[in-house]
Image (cartoon, rainbow, N blue to C red; front, top):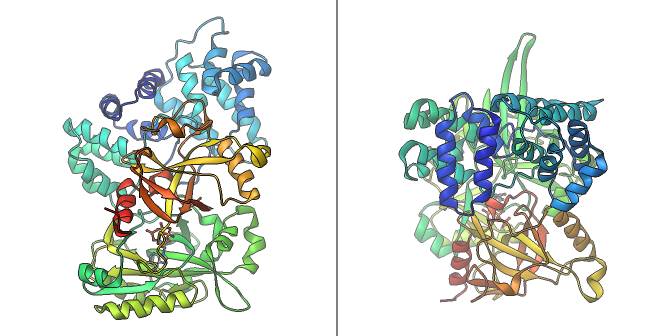
Length: 579
Ligand code: ATP
């Protein structure tokens, strides 16, 4: 397929607001794609050249793109900047500058050609790489038509914004195979185990539905994290789950650890990688994991854990915020001594070539205990196994006394449920009614912001609008204007300006006129919101609103797809006693 053809598909996708139409366009695109190019097309649709979890970044900023466009079309950089300012988008600017060319390109570059160049762009690092990147981009721009230039400019800037996520792509694959969405559930199941759309697309393109059996867990590809449901109290938990394992709920960061022994010519070495719950490769952030070989009896293993900072003097666990300072890449070495990390390992998902996801927790725990030797970095999360609500309560209260967030209660005979918030795991933070307040926080996506008035006009932001997930879209649930420190306002403004868009994003279906913000932003930033309680709302798209909302923190470890859903909010409303 030529890239020009793909660009037409991009355009059709960009122009439609309807998710069903997008699905059909994607299916049509996938049907047209050859089996050797469908994977590459999937990554390009995601604005990438590799799956999300591979740490390959383009490293291209606006100013470099401006230089590349100017170089390609022989125009002044200020002309590109002018076009950029006018359209608010460098894709449109590239298209505009293309028209300055005397002879039009009759582009025959294939998808694979463009993919390879973009891949080379991402691989180009080190000294002189910026110049090399500009040359690569300028060469591509010179060899493609104007519509292709529009999308090629947007990809490395992460501004493709076609308005759909991986789930719509799975619908598209289902539609390609069956003419409807009936395979979506099966596709999603394999995606949860191996979230690599390109790989899945290649497998089903080549083998049809049977290809799904080729998609298996593998060390180096993160498995989607199992998540917790909510139940109001310990009695309900035992009623619903029977025998349970109860563990502390550590206030840290979820880390999936992938361990592998690699045979090399000069002997064996180990390879350790780690992934966050939103599938980012976090290996560089946790250097202490590189020494875990001594603690593991396995040649390969995937472990699920929560990393928590520990005060070296008192031995006490340190809360989330401080642990997160470790995440700031540049501080890693500096903070290493100050905040040693402990990885509380609570599950094993894979060992020595065998996928353990279908095994009951009781069995996985046995294997975990045989595999992990307690030591400096890895600690097996302590647990009790019980079918008595009173014991669950006592254990929970002990965790709260120790400064933990509460407990996680897990069904003892349940399989690991990748990517699911099912009743196999339930979080137990606070018993209903103890404080009369919302017992859990909501992870919401920032949809836009309002310029400040009065005191806050100096910040240029005085309130922001947040939403929860409804299918693949987001609906509003509250507007937040208080309880945010000056420092956080400044940070929010900076981060939201980087996500600013001229029009309401397609994913924001229903926004009531009372809440139209001054500035719309792409759905990227997740924030954790606390509130006094939930009330019914005729104006908020969720049908429910958070009363007296407060910003708890920015959740960089979560993607918009991990945001709280409308049905969870409704469930929280019902548990709070609402009808
Ligand atoms: P919260 O917002 O309350 O931190 P969450 O929204 O991040 O929770 P939940 O699904 O509600 O996610 O809770 C599961 C999270 O709890 C996991 O992602 C993990 O990071 C954390 N956690 C802490 N201790 C444990 C444990 N023992 N077992 C499983 N998860 C744990």
